[in-house]
Length: 519
Image 1 (cartoon, helix red, strand yellow):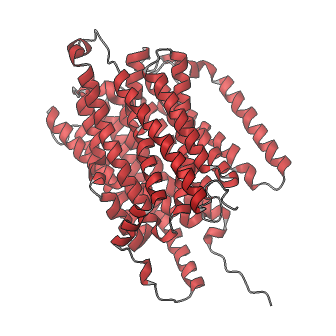
Image 2 (cartoon, rainbow, N blue to C red; image 1 turned 180 degrees about the vertical axis):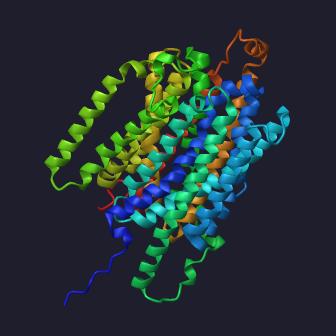
Image 3 (tube, rainbow, N blue to C red; image 1 turned 60 degrees about the vertical axis):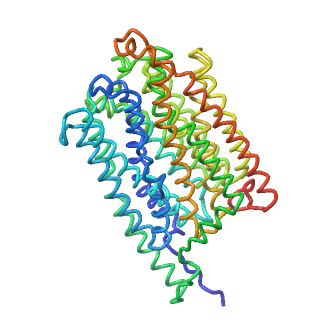
């Protein structure tokens, strides 16, 4: 007699993807809040009197709690008490941080500049304390639901939601704020609160699947080896493969996230892009410019999903190919229809800078699907690092606007390649019951790099332009970004070296980084 196979919610594709969507709301909203200030830098200078160094402090202090171990604490909580408690606790901390930042920007906590800046920093610290742990929660949850299924693709789509938040936050903040900082901050903070509500809905799924898996496993006593021990953290630090991928995470993201915060201002100052979107580039939806602009990003994201996800769930290769062809034709038709609007967008600093996360919206699900099927994760990390070097050289040393466009697109592709390959690779290197601690350790190290570069670019920008600061304030000169951005090329070189070392480790230990998820 054949033994009956017991199934759980994760065996249903519809429920797996529903859980992912609920979870990804937090990813979308926190990435929006992380990056939306980039589109407001010039406005913060003129409306609030905040200079480049203060701007760097506001965005850089987001990482301070994580530098000193908050993510490790979150990882321990995640490993010991589970996804639900960690998500609710740190989601609430991020929401509180957003609320304080919004209150400060609105002048509710004081109206002199130093008070506003200090409270905004406090809010960003609290937000950052929740942000990175929520990233660990998201990654750990996806492994829980998708391991053995479409793991790399699910991680890629979750990242795609994050990049969608980054792109829309960067591009739409001025539209939402109506030319003022406070409304844009309030809107961004509200998104986090709404996403936390959706996560609470997700916990219903999480409770159910835990009960199902417990029933399948029986009433076995929990093995003490499942409990967190600091020796586990020490074991991670002794694992050379983990060190390579963790340092790669630091080097790569230090060259991406800080740059994104300054990219609109760089394009305005170096290439003469507009700060305010010209009327010819406005998209109106239901009477709203912000909704109209948002619809463009959503359509890009839906195209990526249709191209990368839908064909995998049809019965024949011919039908899958047909869906891809139809998707490309419809997307090309949309681009042609929007060509005049998009041409104007490409002369605006914030909209053009959003090409970076926009590229990830299109390519991350596609690359995630490729990693699931073909593998080649370490090789893709090498390629992404090469693109990173080209991008920063084109935007620092060279002064050709056409090459700058290619640089931004290359950065978007690199921003898709490396994460789509890197995060699933961790799950192959580290045992599942220690993934929370492993991801938390990586995010902690990453925050050391982000904290340095978020603040460092602003401080260095002010230093290298110190002789012309009065002229810049008077509108007679512009910031020279060459040196601050050129430094990021070094991060790309380090990323290539670490990717090669990781590929060597894969050959030595047989992690399967170059193999597909089901190989």
